[in-house]
Image 1 (cartoon, rainbow, N blue to C red):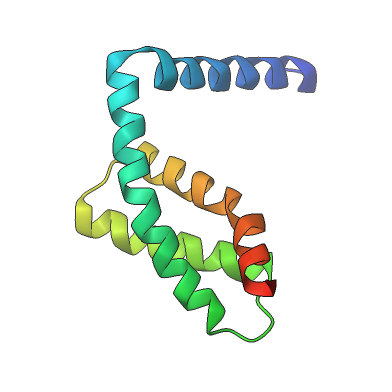
Image 2 (image 1 turned 135 degrees about the vertical axis):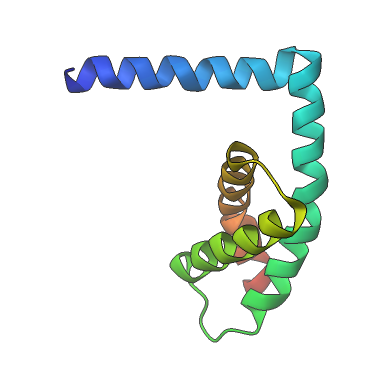
Length: 102
């Protein structure tokens, strides 16, 4: 499969997943669960990253992956939910970076 077709296919899958999370009742429930896990983990990560000297995005990403792995194991979380949590937490780096510098 060519690069364009592969990109088109993956884009379609991501679009369908986004639609499912926002449009269906089950998707909205899943999104609410995800958000309920997001804030406590973010607060934990914020404390951890502030203890590091000169934190970088790479350091933060590594902390996110390790923290979510541990959290997901405790909560017996599905792999797709764990991956979505990692993705959402990684998006918060710029917000955290502003808080650290501010």
